[in-house]
Amino acid sequence: MAAAAGVAAVLPAGPVASQVRFGSYPFQLGVASGDPSADGFVIWTRLAPEPFAPEALGNTIYELTWEVAEDQAFARIRASGIGLARAHVLHAVHVEVGGLEPGREYFYRFRLGKYESPTGRALTCPVGEASRPLRFAVACCAHYEQGFFSAYRYIADDRPDLVLMLGDYIYEDAWGERRVRLFDTPEAQTLTDYRRRYTQYRTDPDLQAAHAACPWLAVWDDHEVDNDYAGVTGENEVCGGAGVRDSFPGRRAAAYQAYFEHMPLRPSRLQSGMAARLYGALDWGRLARFYLLDTRQYRSVQACPNAPTPWRCDNDRGRKILYSGAGGGGFVDPEEPACKAALADPARTMLGAEQERWLDAALADSRANWNVLTQGVMFVTILESWNGSPRIFTDAWAGYPPARERLLASLARHQTANPVVLTGDIHSFWVNEIANAAGRPFGVELVSSSIATSTTDKSQVLPLNPQVRFHEGNHCGYIRCDLDRDRLRADLVAIDDRLDPRSGRSVLASFEVRAGDPHAHRI
Image: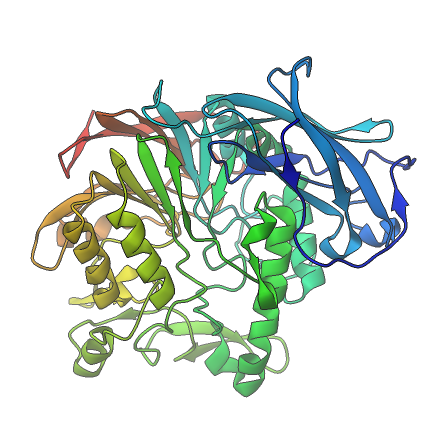
């Protein structure tokens, strides 16, 4: 049997149970896989007979049997073992499965006594030349209140090899005029709050289907913690003063813990202080190298925080008031002298020094035909016009120009083959062509709309942005990509009506990126 590892930490002891009876089915939150490699992947579930009352399981440690097979009937089992569900991680189980064959499809499940989980599908990465094209889906921005998760259902129907989740898997805050279902708290602040958020999400059948369909590669953006946070600085730090500043690191740690508990991440990604190293690279044979970038945990605070942009902050009576100069991003004039100087500061970083060094080294040793950077926020600088003067958004890469140029210089220095940037965040579809400050073209950025949020139509800014080849801001959806040695095809898949749980879908547009050609071609 193949080997596997569980949580690699010293864990509290407690009574152990392998034969139990529950009043309800204990696998109500489904299963998931992620972090695939050439010889394995991580598989996940959470024991939850009463999903919103986890205390009912007490401190008991539950022994779950897991199996990985070559067939859905589990006649050819290739790996099996025991996973421990422990209270301090909300009885979640993360099993790192190894020793499997590369480039194969597998199926997995969990068992506890008479109870059996749903079956999930996982794949190992190929080595060498891939024998067939790679299909992957690009997803982001799923607000539970603002729409149903039809996009996830269609992702599962497409039967991809990978799902790339680019952030805002949950939303910490409740907002929107048309809500199809409600959060149980207005804004998540504590570990209990974040855990309940993930529990609500994980009860959704369409999300469960997408997780069971294939492995996920996930990075976070801001709403897993707090809108527009940067490093250990929250959005409303200026609004709340020192109290917010002092409490935010604890809030971030709680959010990160809940994220780990509910995502198919390897326990080896955990670091001290409830940090997690999400950034890393995955090789799909020699076809593609995926670079997972963390654009939140290590970044510098946004520039020009006193820009006259109204933000909403809580006052001491719990009401929302307008406040100019709150933390977070804003639209600023990049030519205003003080702001121009701040934007040009080379010490400011989007990725942090350590991640920048890692990325440079990973680009240097890549032999992949395609190099795909998966990350949270808009990479191409988008100009907007406010009363006739240009504005940029400081929470995106436009607010970190030296950091962006350093990344582009790294791509040039290492002659990186066929770079493609995948982006989320902005609740609309974009196809952008990437160039550096000197105008040298590098590749293409594909921006996915949201799984379910209010959308963002920016068509009025297109005359200011000739680098944009396509934009549509009226539909939620995702991007379906098919990749082979010679081309990447991207279908921009739109959900007809996010407020309809059985909504249809359509392809708004399809684009092709050809190997050796840093441009997007509509097909």
